[in-house]
Length: 115
Image 1 (tube, helix red, strand yellow):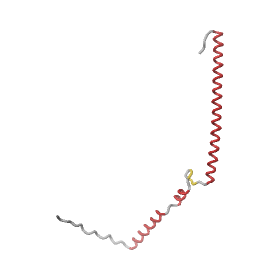
Image 2 (cartoon, rainbow, N blue to C red):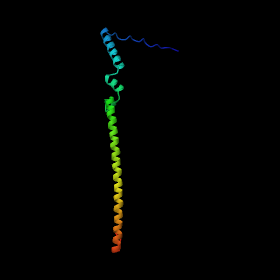
Image 3 (cartoon, one colour):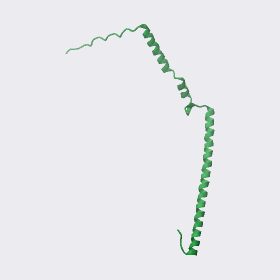
Image 4 (tube, one colour):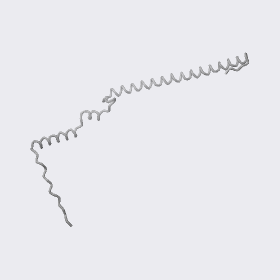
Protein backbone atom coordinates (compact mmCIF):
# COMPACT_ATOMS: atom_id res chain seq x y z
CA UNK A 1 0.00 0.00 0.00
CA UNK A 2 1.57 3.22 -1.08
CA UNK A 3 0.51 6.69 -0.20
CA UNK A 4 0.94 9.61 -2.44
CA UNK A 5 1.22 13.07 -1.22
CA UNK A 6 0.17 16.06 -3.16
CA UNK A 7 2.68 18.77 -3.78
CA UNK A 8 2.54 21.63 -1.30
CA UNK A 9 0.21 24.44 -2.26
CA UNK A 10 1.97 27.41 -3.67
CA UNK A 11 1.63 30.60 -1.67
CA UNK A 12 -0.68 33.24 -3.08
CA UNK A 13 1.00 35.77 -5.30
CA UNK A 14 2.27 38.76 -3.46
CA UNK A 15 0.12 41.83 -3.91
CA UNK A 16 1.21 45.37 -3.55
CA UNK A 17 -0.10 47.27 -0.53
CA UNK A 18 -1.90 49.71 -2.84
CA UNK A 19 -3.97 47.01 -4.56
CA UNK A 20 -4.80 45.47 -1.18
CA UNK A 21 -5.99 48.82 0.14
CA UNK A 22 -8.13 49.53 -2.89
CA UNK A 23 -9.59 46.01 -2.81
CA UNK A 24 -10.37 46.35 0.90
CA UNK A 25 -11.97 49.72 0.30
CA UNK A 26 -14.07 48.36 -2.56
CA UNK A 27 -15.17 45.43 -0.40
CA UNK A 28 -16.10 47.77 2.46
CA UNK A 29 -18.15 49.96 0.07
CA UNK A 30 -19.92 46.90 -1.30
CA UNK A 31 -20.83 45.73 2.19
CA UNK A 32 -22.17 49.16 3.09
CA UNK A 33 -24.26 49.33 -0.09
CA UNK A 34 -25.70 45.88 0.57
CA UNK A 35 -26.47 46.57 4.22
CA UNK A 36 -28.25 49.90 3.67
CA UNK A 37 -31.48 49.93 1.62
CA UNK A 38 -31.64 52.51 -1.11
CA UNK A 39 -33.91 55.52 -0.79
CA UNK A 40 -36.38 54.05 -3.29
CA UNK A 41 -36.58 50.79 -1.39
CA UNK A 42 -37.09 52.60 1.92
CA UNK A 43 -40.03 54.61 0.54
CA UNK A 44 -41.51 51.58 -1.19
CA UNK A 45 -41.23 49.42 1.92
CA UNK A 46 -42.80 51.91 4.31
CA UNK A 47 -45.61 53.28 2.13
CA UNK A 48 -47.83 51.23 -0.15
CA UNK A 49 -47.92 52.54 -3.69
CA UNK A 50 -50.82 53.43 -5.95
CA UNK A 51 -49.99 53.33 -9.64
CA UNK A 52 -46.30 53.17 -8.75
CA UNK A 53 -46.43 56.24 -6.50
CA UNK A 54 -46.46 56.33 -2.70
CA UNK A 55 -49.75 57.59 -1.36
CA UNK A 56 -50.82 59.55 1.68
CA UNK A 57 -53.94 59.69 3.83
CA UNK A 58 -55.24 62.44 1.53
CA UNK A 59 -54.98 60.05 -1.43
CA UNK A 60 -56.76 57.36 0.57
CA UNK A 61 -59.65 59.70 1.42
CA UNK A 62 -59.88 60.80 -2.22
CA UNK A 63 -59.96 57.19 -3.42
CA UNK A 64 -62.67 56.34 -0.87
CA UNK A 65 -64.77 59.29 -2.12
CA UNK A 66 -64.31 58.19 -5.74
CA UNK A 67 -65.30 54.65 -4.81
CA UNK A 68 -68.45 55.84 -3.04
CA UNK A 69 -69.35 58.02 -6.04
CA UNK A 70 -68.78 55.12 -8.44
CA UNK A 71 -70.98 52.84 -6.35
CA UNK A 72 -73.76 55.44 -6.26
CA UNK A 73 -73.54 55.89 -10.04
CA UNK A 74 -73.64 52.11 -10.49
CA UNK A 75 -76.79 51.83 -8.38
CA UNK A 76 -78.46 54.66 -10.31
CA UNK A 77 -77.62 53.00 -13.63
CA UNK A 78 -78.88 49.64 -12.38
CA UNK A 79 -82.18 51.30 -11.38
CA UNK A 80 -82.48 52.94 -14.81
CA UNK A 81 -81.72 49.63 -16.51
CA UNK A 82 -84.36 47.84 -14.44
CA UNK A 83 -86.92 50.55 -15.26
CA UNK A 84 -86.12 50.26 -18.98
CA UNK A 85 -86.46 46.47 -18.89
CA UNK A 86 -89.85 46.83 -17.18
CA UNK A 87 -90.94 49.40 -19.78
CA UNK A 88 -89.86 47.19 -22.71
CA UNK A 89 -91.68 44.23 -21.15
CA UNK A 90 -94.86 46.31 -20.81
CA UNK A 91 -94.60 47.59 -24.38
CA UNK A 92 -94.04 44.08 -25.70
CA UNK A 93 -97.08 42.76 -23.82
CA UNK A 94 -99.26 45.69 -24.94
CA UNK A 95 -98.16 45.32 -28.56
CA UNK A 96 -98.74 41.56 -28.44
CA UNK A 97 -102.26 42.10 -27.07
CA UNK A 98 -103.08 44.65 -29.80
CA UNK A 99 -101.77 42.32 -32.51
CA UNK A 100 -103.97 39.51 -31.17
CA UNK A 101 -107.02 41.80 -31.16
CA UNK A 102 -106.28 42.88 -34.73
CA UNK A 103 -105.87 39.24 -35.79
CA UNK A 104 -109.25 38.34 -34.25
CA UNK A 105 -110.85 41.37 -35.89
CA UNK A 106 -109.40 40.50 -39.29
CA UNK A 107 -110.41 36.85 -38.92
CA UNK A 108 -113.96 37.89 -38.16
CA UNK A 109 -114.04 40.28 -41.09
CA UNK A 110 -112.25 38.18 -43.72
CA UNK A 111 -112.33 34.70 -42.22
CA UNK A 112 -108.58 34.29 -42.64
CA UNK A 113 -105.94 33.94 -39.94
CA UNK A 114 -102.76 36.00 -40.48
CA UNK A 115 -99.66 34.69 -38.82
